[in-house]
Structure formats: structure tokens, C-alpha cells
Length: 439
Image (cartoon, rainbow, N blue to C red; front, side, top):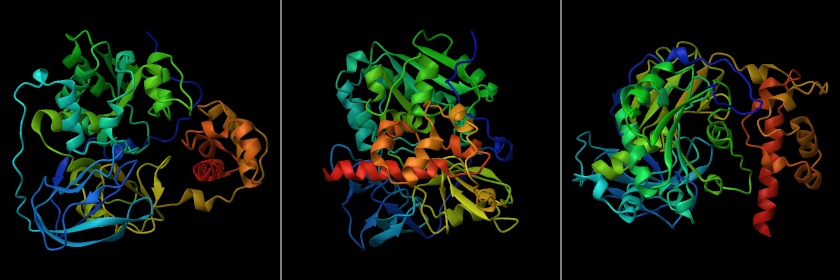
């Protein structure tokens, strides 16, 4: 069978060799940790602690603010010092709980489940909800909501997003290499909720070793399969992954569930296992520190709330002053102006680059070469959409299906004129969505 893939896409420099072979190292935080109450899509969590309170690792410090929300747990034991707005990786100021760690890591008592197969569907979803599990690939959508579709009987595929197509990032790779059993067990727990569904692990073929490990574990289970995907960006995009694995298409007006699918990231499925089997909330995640400016690129098991600067220091800091720092990967990450920000549930990486190639390349006029069209995974015409955006033409932008853009950045990457097509399209999408909310 040929490699599964989607239409169009690009092949950026991978850069994964910098940290790929570095086993995950636990990083214990020092001093102050910051816990933003918005680490997910939906209503912010509501603090349930006050300044001066003593907290334990694993204790709820903010409860869910609604159905589409998620609680926040302390990843250390210590004392609540402040509750105030703090900067987060995307640049926003978010109300945050600041805890001074006592360095002792005293924990609450977790309730482990002896036999997960005996749990009801409601009990599984409640455990996932109480543990604060969200989409840890970056989206941050509360997982208990995703696992509660309107018509659960129509779900046919649970897809594990193991592609990790974003250049430089290796956190999912290390998780698959070091804890594949936990990933598979997380998938089995989700399959308990959907008896008609099949579990598929979608892995790009630049991770042959991960494919072999997962295939060895699932070979005797008829409900589990490993799908070998073509290495191409954005193979890990939700719509592209669903198309590659099932041949089904969705658009901006649909949810994966409308196509009979549920998609979860590697780290999310491991978090589901920790929540349901071990009774542990989301307090840690694997975090990649990489880039040609980093002294010792590597992967860390970090506590949520840990300062980015502290994580970088653990990797030996930078050997040269970076011109560009990015939270996440180079294609869809967020440029940073400083590192006084906390790692959250959705933080996957810090990328430090010696040169800022984007800033060094001044955009020139469009030459109508059509490369952005050939690259777009949604079969759009990015150059036209960017033009409509630059002229403030919302009506024509929507008419030309601009809202279908998945903001992958493939068009900007491939453009020989170095035009910031994706940025223009993103801006227009935000403006249109803001107008819709007003109405």
C-alpha cells in the first residue's frame, strides 16, 4: 500500500537531527512558577486559591469556568504569592496564579484505577475532565468536550496525530520512542467510548523507528492500526490528517466528528492514560529546546508554569545571540520578544535561530508564479486572498473561500517574492470572525 498523504503541501528543512536523539530529561523547576488561567480554548478557569495559600503538587488551583473549559492544577508544592496578569507565549496578558515552589514536590494522593475496562463511559469522561486534559498539540481544546460528540455512534475513527510535521520539533517523537505503551493505552481508553471505532496512529515515514515500535505493540489488536504517512508539511494538520488516513474531507463549517473522526495528539493521549489509569492531572509535558543558536538542543519533561528562560538555561543557554526566538515551530509558532513567559499545557518547544531569515528578506511584488496555489493544502489561491486582505475587501475574501485557510504558512514559505501571505490572510480571518461575534 502506498504512503498516505494529502494534496499539495511543502517540504521545509526538517532540522530534527538537532534534538531527535536526545532522551527526555526531567527538569525540576526553581523558585516562581506562573499558571495562566487560560491554557485552553473556551472560558478561562476560575482561581480557587488565594494569596498566601499553601498548595500541593496535583492540587486544583483553578476550576473550569464552563463546559468548554478546563481546570488548572499546580505542578509543584509551595505558596501562592500573587494572582495577577502575566504575559503568555502568544503575547497576551492573562490572569495568572503565581506559586513559589518549596522544592519538596509534596503531592496530593492520586486515585489509580485497577481495571480501566470496568469504567463506564461517563466515568472515563469525568476523569479526563477533572484532570484538565486539553489538546496538547497546540489547539488546547478541552478533551472531555471532544470526547462527547452529539452522535457518538457515528464515530468510526480515532486518529492519533503522530505526524509531528512541524520542523525542528521532536517532543512527540521522543514520547513515541520512550513511552509507546502509554500512548497505545491512551488510545484504548478512548476506544472504550466508541465501540464501533477503529484506532489509527498516523506517523510520518521519517520516523520509521516509531512505526516499528507501535506496530509491534498493536499487531494483535484488530481495532488498532499504524498508518505510514508521507513526510510532508502540514501532514499533521487536522484536516490533512483526516484526509490522508480516511480519504474524507472536512471544511471550516464542520468538525472532525461530522466526518466520523476524532483526532488527538500524542501528548493528549498520554495525558488521557495518566488521567484515567493513574488518576493524575496535567502537570507536565515534553518540551523541545532547539535551534542552531542553542548550545545543547534537547528534550525536557517540564512542569507547567516553568519559565522559558529557565528551560533554555537547562539546555546550556545560547552559544550565540539569537536573532529569532519562536514558541513552537517555525511554520506555525509565535515569535517571542522575551523569555519571561511560562510553559503551559500547549507549549511544545522553544526555537532559537541564529539568523532571522524572514526579517532579512524584504518582500517584492507578486510575479503570479502560482507556487502558493501549488502549495496550499486547502486548494486556495493565497496570493489573491492576501491582496483582498491588504485592500480590506472582506466580501470578496469570503467569496474566494478565505475562511477555509488553515493558517499553515505553506504559501509564505514557498513564495519566491517573500510576501507574507499567511499573515495577511490570518489578519483578515480574525477581522471577519470579530465582525461575526459582534452580530
